[in-house]
Image (cartoon, rainbow, N blue to C red):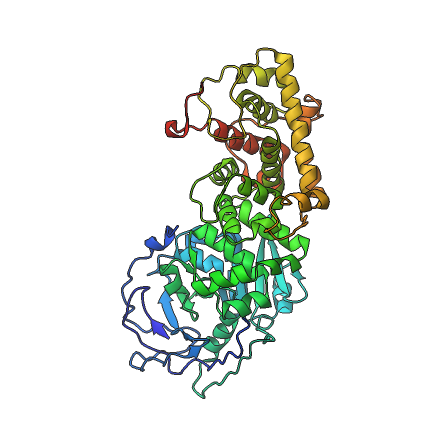
Length: 538
């Protein structure tokens, strides 16, 4: 294994070659990467799990696997990579420490290690340990074993859940189109072999990193560091086989590329396009989860663009795909539209560790579709957002809206030319009509018949009547707008005070918090703060 900085070309190796792997029959914004600087070579020989690493061993020969050179194994100092203990959350540290005290090996693994290397805030932290899951459960008073196919432990620490998997249950089962033959040497380090086997089961190379926070070592067996440098999403095993094995990886690839601003390797991109339809095999709960990861964690705009580019939007959100087509929006279009602008403004308020409840982005989709069906006066939309924020007090909302002197954005076809609605009763009627229209659009989005008809004018598009929004989310979205329809007659509702967002409450779907963020997103889209985004209304 090479002990190097990310860009250091001087290499030493482990005292053994990686097990030979044979793959049989093939089935078919670069922003953060710039932060990875050349790191100095580690001059000492780190010791992990009691295994010494000679500095003079020759490098292992590259293994050819599906036309690719098998990556050299590397081990890096987490301190040199800039990873600090303060970057790990307290609940995660507690679980790591308790398992270590019991004598088990523990590592952080997957996307959280990638994010730590890239100086990003991880969405969550995943732990893997040498302990059996039953032993993990004995260690913590509040711990549940969940999952049948790939069981893991959910360790409850106050209001947080820390996921813990075991090396004993996370090994890869050879798939139909891929056969793994392993051959170990008598001097093979069993710890590296165990870590390598686990990383082989990962989806993408950049997720195939392991971090031992107690020895301060980061392990890279799949070439993940090199792909981080190149800002590239690449599957661990051949992409076509990987996506056939688990089609959910297609959506994870979109989500990761959108969030990091990475591009796909050619093999990965072609396989996503070829196997896009396979995501229809996923159950609706899984689809909702993956869509929520895309739209609720601060990378919604980029996710929608990639879904559209790779032909997935017309499968998952046919109504929104029909809107893109009607706008003449091309697959590789760099320009924006109102739907993308709404989600861009939502992204500015969210982050991987500060997500929103799914009812918020579903509500935005329904609101936008209502405007597509019937464009509205900016004054109506302004009053609508203000009334939502204050719990349905239309009189107060109208009073404030009439004092707005900031120019609105006039390029969206979803907005009509401001006509000056002088009568308060007429304005109230139009605002309530908009709220009713949003609920109608929501109903259409959750009706298989209407969804299937969305792209009827575009016969070249694949047919989809997919509805993955569950009843509980539908009802929660309806509640957002009912205060306007009922003119603020809700009992016990307390409007949001101040502009600071309570992200814990937002993630739980707290009504006042959701209405507050929804109102900010819509208002900032119609009345953008940057002068260059505005055109004076005539």
